[in-house]
Length: 278
Image 1 (cartoon, rainbow, N blue to C red):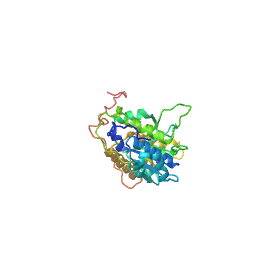
Image 2 (image 1 turned 180 degrees about the vertical axis):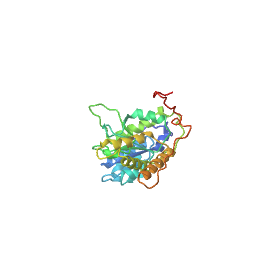
Image 3 (image 1 turned 90 degrees about the vertical axis):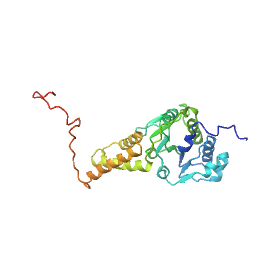
Image 4 (image 1 turned 45 degrees about the horizontal axis):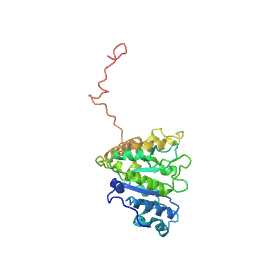
């Protein structure tokens, strides 16, 4: 079949091809991987990651990749999801399932609209196994869950369709407005360190205990993701919770500091004799 007509050499949202990384978690069919590579190539995307692919056969994948062969050849294969996400700054998962212990959902176009108002960041677009999608443990890394609209009668897309629709939406001219100045973000490795410190502190003070409902720790983690701290803010939070953890562990002394004389607390008027504020 002749090659189809051509997008401009520079896509309207060309920057997305730089920061968007497609991460397939435990894909089970090499033909589907090839079809994903073809969809990526159609729209100018090239960063493909395969996490623990099942019986992956590059030659079989190439039969459905067509002109996407360079994407397949450049694919990164990882043993674990944590390894694939270690250097990412943002993670979003594609899933239609809802649940109390899952991140907040956004419809695909809502997510893209948010991107227009945010500086670019190295972002993993997470797609789960073909038969059952992303597991709960995969979603713990996600800032958002993205839902691709569909009918109630048939809500499921196949893997390559999902990737193609997501990348097409990212490539639309609507998102070609000038983005804000880029900011440095902590990597997932650094955010995971913060997650562990926050978890330790909350267990030390008894907020997390044996009676804590299971979704609550995940909810706290998802809240930290949605805060979207920049690199400096992330390091301040890590340093702050690290010091709290060491103090609660008795590894450093605690020296309470009185409020500054000009602080609002210090300026509060004293109550009058009848107990009312003057």
